[in-house]
Structures are given as structure tokens and as C-alpha cells.
Length: 306
Ligand SMILES: NC(=O)c1ccc[n+]([C@@H]2O[C@H](COP(=O)([O-])OP(=O)(O)OC[C@H]3O[C@@H](n4cnc5c(N)ncnc54)[C@H](O)[C@@H]3O)[C@@H](O)[C@H]2O)c1
Ligand SMILES: O=C(O)C[C@H](O)C(=O)O
Image: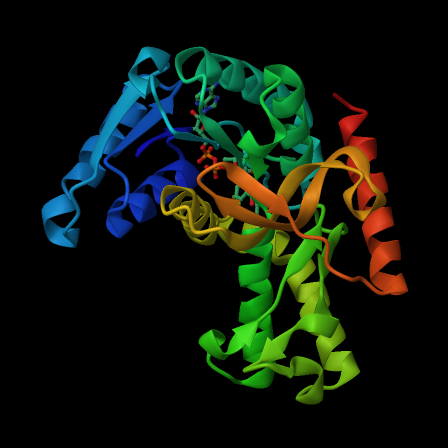
């Protein structure tokens, strides 16, 4: 499998590193607009190959999309990250132009590519990528829910004082500080509802901490996070490579599912060789449905800024 990662910054490089370490792709091409930057990151990563034991070939290119030709998967991380105090939505004016031109360049060289959109505001950038490329809807996926769910599991495990591997949980909705919907009712510890182990107040704290997970890290780091985002993307690329049909909440173009249309927003989906193999409609209660409606309204408002 050939994977292109556009943007060789914090998230792009982390994503390339995790893909290489898992050793399922034959080739990763990093692309950046900054002269020599992707080439440098690729060389540095290749010099970890003998230490980390992978054979994936990583190369870099400065804005040269001919090097990306024939990619099976492309990840778009190009654009600016937020600074402390900002929302993801504030990035739209800079990132929309970048994501649109990158998506157009990618499909010229790789007409069969599956695109994973990471740049923020991610749901709107995923919607923009659909509009700009006209690719079939299964071939454009926004990454947000996989990361948000990993953060939810981290917070749940902390609250219950259990190993993270004992915890399961999912976050749907828009990838924003207010729009995320951690499905607290469905979170489990070894199949037992987490609600049986912690109070409703503690669960509410977990929910709120999950929703502002990205903002919390941005405040600590001075820029947004990259390790968990890179790991989340690499897990999705691996599911495509292995045709795993693994369920991730991710931003998909909806055509009636969950009562929503003409919007990209986080819902559970099976990810396999064709990208989005199936959108899974789970039963939501009235409160969760209302949260999803409100989250969709907020995403539509941001889409309106395009
Ligand atoms: N969806 C998510 O869950 C998630 C998670 C983390 C970060 N993000 C987003 O990902 C984006 C990247 O974050 P980062 O921390 O890696 O930022 P970064 O600044 O470290 O890296 C971005 C890179 O994009 C490059 N770039 C800019 N314009 C380009 C273009 N036209 N073509 C190619 N490369 C270009 C820059 O030179 C830079 O190296 C941000 O928008 C951030 O908000 C999203
Ligand atoms: O928080 C951000 O701005 C980056 C990303 O969306 C994240 O959740 O880490």
C-alpha cells in the first residue's frame, strides 16, 4: 500500500511514524509546502527504520504531487493548528484554501485514492473535500471520533481506576469543543456499564474533560496535540490496508442516516478497503438525538463560512 501524508508537521510526521512502525504499508510519501521540510522528516524517520525494525519506505517531497502518484490512501494534515484560547472553527479562513488545493492536487495524481481529512475544523474540511473533489462518498473520511474516543477511554479509565484496555467507549458528533458527544450511557468496563462504577457527577466530569480534550492539550503544549492524532489516523489507515471493517466513529457524508443530510459529522462507520464500507446507525435515546441535532446545527454554521 502507498500512503501519502500531506503536511509533514507535528501530526503528519507522527502519523507517518506510526504507520511505518506498524509496518503494513510499502511506502509513505510526506509532502509539505516548506522547502526541504518533508524530505528532512522522511530522512530522519528512515534513520529509525533499523532501530524500530520496519521496512516501510518513507520519502519526502516539497509540493511535488507527481511523487504521490498511485497512492491508495492520502491523509491531509496541511494547515495551521490552533493556539491556546482559540477554537478549531477560527482556523477555517486559512485552512479551507489549503485543504481544497491539496485535495485537488491529490486526486489528479491518484484518481482512486481514499482521503482521510485531519485539518481543522475537520468536519467542515471533510465536507469541503467532498465538494472540491466529487469523489464517491465512501472515499473521503474525516478523522476526529477515533481520537476523541481514545481520549474518552483515557478519562473513563482514570475515573474508574482501571486499565485502559478494560474500557470501551465512543464519541460521536462534531469534532469541536462543544459538539462532541461522548456516549456515556454506552461506555463499558469489561462489558459492564461504566455508570455502575462511578457517580453521575463523576461521569459528567469525564464527559466534559473529553469534550475539551484538544483544548486542554493546546493550553499545555502551546499548539495542538500530535501523538494521539497521529495514532488515530494510522489506526484508520491500517483498517483500510487490512480491509478490517473495523468500527470507528468518523466524519462521513450523511444522506439521511441519523436523520441528517448534506453534512459531514462523526458517526460510527466500518472502515475497510473501500474506505467507509458502511455507516452504522446505532439506537440513540432522545437526549443523545438532541445533542446530535445541536452538534449538526453547529457544523452547518461553520460550513456556512466556506
Ligand atoms: N482532526 C483531528 O483530530 C486533528 C488532530 C490534531 C490536529 N489537527 C489539525 O491538523 C492540522 C495540522 O496540525 P499540526 O499540529 O500538524 O500543524 P503543523 O503546523 O505542525 O503542521 C502543518 C504543516 O502543514 C504544512 N502546510 C501548510 N500549507 C500547506 C500546503 N498548502 N501544502 C502542504 N503542506 C502545507 C506546513 O508547512 C506544516 O508543516 C491543524 O489544522 C490541526 O488543527 C486535527
Ligand atoms: O485541538 C485541536 O485543535 C487539534 C485536534 O482537533 C485535537 O483534538 O487534538
